Length: 608
Image (cartoon, rainbow, N blue to C red):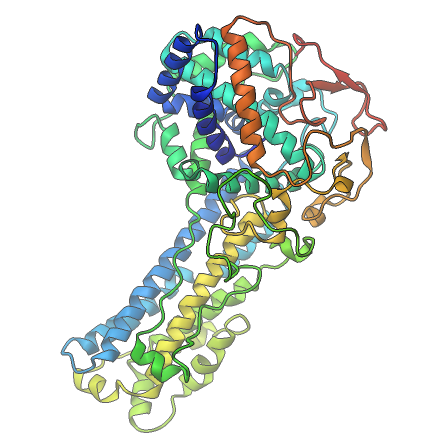
């Protein structure tokens, strides 16, 4: 199973490939008409290509969507805080740069009050972050495949049934049932999704070390990585919100699945599967609503631009070497490597691996999930700093004006904020500071604007915003490492880079058995024994990159559509999870998948 952005990239590629294909001239009018219908009905085509995701959502427990919604809400709050701190910084710097201006004192005081009030928005946030991080780290949002649990087919979810039973027949049933331009566009999307899953899952099996059922956590990270890669090659397919908007059929955000689309898909399901062997019918409208919502939420996680340096006048005061000013604090886990100015993909071609060879294998620290980076302590530090700034129009100003040091500043701001990950104010201290605020007069502000402590404040505010930026970057890394968000901007990190080229021949024999503790070790290629009968790795050369799946699936789309148009009967019946590798037919285990070797029984074409 591939991710939504891979489906979107493949759909665009398949339309172009089929338009340029050399087909029988007698078929050209029908092909041109179909492609025109796809262009006129983009929502239907996208719906068909993402049918596997819709069906997965239709019978899921909704846990992943709930976690994603929580994470998106926290992310939005963090970005809003970051943006507001930037605006406060701008006002404070403007006031201090021209203290004689009649409005400077009011501008400064208003900015500090706004910053202090932000404390109400982050109060208790560390507890929410810790709780969400704990639940994400459990990885319960990526459930076990029912095949791996030896469950009967009628106990499977519809997404898994769709990928593993009568896959070719479903495509043909879709074209046979399509009587309107919109329905034919949906059928083309189903064809596109079929070919993309078959090729994409074959590629994933090689870089993961086995199929989705055996290595579900590792497969989740890999499929998101491949989608991120292909979104760089085809930017029009990489915008989650744009994809969600396409699925909305151009209607208002609250619009649901159109009746015509639901009726068409229901008819195709009924034509394809034996109801006595499958689960109860899926709730297509529920699945559709969840799918669109997931895509909208995934579009939330956009890293804001780095904070701007203070104005040159403050840079000259703050740093001895203004030609080499500081940059936001970033870590090796969260920073984009400074030498990489592009997207991390290299040339937008399919000519080979798009990333350099491994400099080292991924380790446990590369999962980005082994530490919460003391986020709770950081948010307490944020609260403390906001409270400090609220006093700068009051007690500190008075003490500085008398030539004495400010106890609160010296005790907490200049020292403790620089260790915000380690310390914080007590609620009593915050309340005491907040009660001492009083406005400054323009005369007081003009006399004291050159105080070194206020220049230090400018530097601290810059550092504060930089830490917020870093916190967002860490949060994005954590979400990507848990498989709920895309690893945008991280493709060169070892955790993700390993999935962008088929490994050496020694690591190319699949499938490997599941890990005993997959949550702890999914970052590495599985060292477990092979699940026999195994595959020797033929068909995908070492170094093959994800662009292969676009080429491979485009050829498959052309061949399959041509066969359908010519009236040829179905023959191939590929498992769309490529569960036994490339082009392996739909199958069932004669016993348990834990047997050695597994009793692999290839299903008849008509068998559900």
